[in-house]
Image 1 (tube, rainbow, N blue to C red):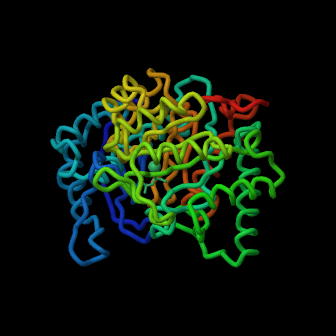
Image 2: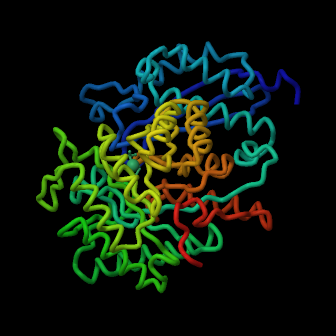
Image 3: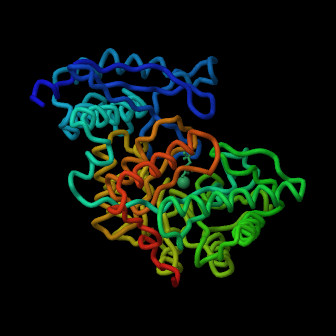
Length: 432
Ligand code: 2PG
Ligand code: MG
């Protein structure tokens, strides 16, 4: 492959539709000889305030979510700037996007335009090297398959605030392979649905495919998870553990936490105590955004109280930002990073946050957004960057299953070389 074959010939963008039926931006990077990379921007619902901003049209059409302005930015501003550049120089390309945008939150070009182009360029570079993306990223390093974190019940902003906790998830900490982790989760998902149906409470699914949380209290979600794990024939804790995304910024107002379902307004310490009580009583191994993005004291206190036993994940709190990760590591405000490329806006910045977490000894969880498409880039990033975990939503709806299925294919391609991270990335691996 000659140098010329790596020079970007054309960058294009179009509007496609995401899993919520909203417009989103898809970018393509074309190289000479028909080699192409393509990627689609995902979109969050419970977004951190310091995330990269999507560029949306506003107005009446499609609820204001249209992306024609972002598509135009790719066509008129980004494409001419990238033409002729070496597609393998991801950092150089991303630097141009950052400089062209010139704002701290990428609102001029749009975080959606930037991340789609950044990921499309990576796909094109891998295609030019004639390698699957995960293998291109590994660059000869041994692969590691992430422990999946899979939602069973959806809540919070993904279920009309029906319950306060956003994600009730399971992690197959006792599974021996990625494929086995999915087998076990499929049975838990089925068992949870069967119980809800028996109780006359099966009311469809939330945004990420987890069952709609027709619960009387937040804690009922935990009870139902444990029963579903047992019904599926797995041992709660040893084989199948629980993980929560509290997404607490969503119900934090004026320094207090408003638990709508439980009809309680609590302060930071009380919410921390409530969650610590759940950790004592249920086989919970991971809690994401236990306190709000502005509640650094609460995050520090919570991590000091339970961080030796459970993973405390920063999502809204860290927004995939290297400086924030370094700060949180110094403060011991959490011990794991949720890695969402569109929070950063380019892959280079995403990777910087990832590396900062790894250097600080923090866990790494590559994550999808609640608004997704069939794009499977994050499955490749998780394997290619050797992340400890992968969070994609539930075990239904094809925008979710596309990612799980992609990792299955990678595991199969690795054959005997496949090493599964299992529970190793977690602070307290359960006894075998
Ligand atoms: C999260 C994500 C995925 P959203 O909070 O971790 O569950 O949700 O994409 O809406 O931010
Ligand atoms: Mg989250």
